[in-house]
Image 1 (spheres, rainbow, N blue to C red):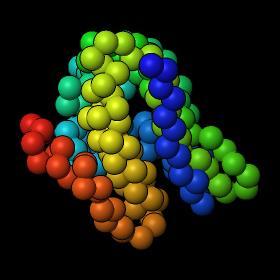
Image 2: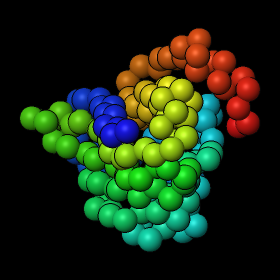
Image 3: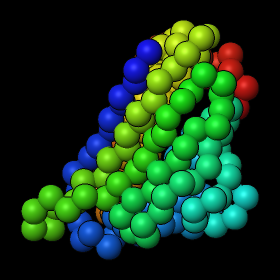
Image 4: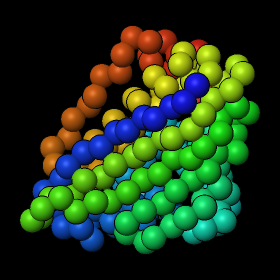
Length: 160
């Protein structure tokens, strides 16, 4: 199955402010990843091309990194996820910046079913939480997003 999944949020902020959130990913100063609610991203070295890591059962290697603007992760697991996901910081007019996350992959075998039933709902909830973290980091109001019943059930039975 071909998958294209996009989450984005526009911010009234300077490009370098949003870019700093991207650059802090998987570091001690990470203000983007909602690690208070989700498994933390871990990498075997700082954010750079060739760094290997993941979060939960999702594994990847960084294949492209443009500081403050773009990072692309190539999936290495789970089996049947063939493709990549990336974060990009895109200028959108005067003092407006879009932070966008895109998944583009092809699933095969059981991964097609697991994406549809497990990974996609969890991924969607995680990305919306990350965009909320970005909003808070950029001075926006704190907002606790309520997960869907399905996501809450999956979280209750899945190991953290």
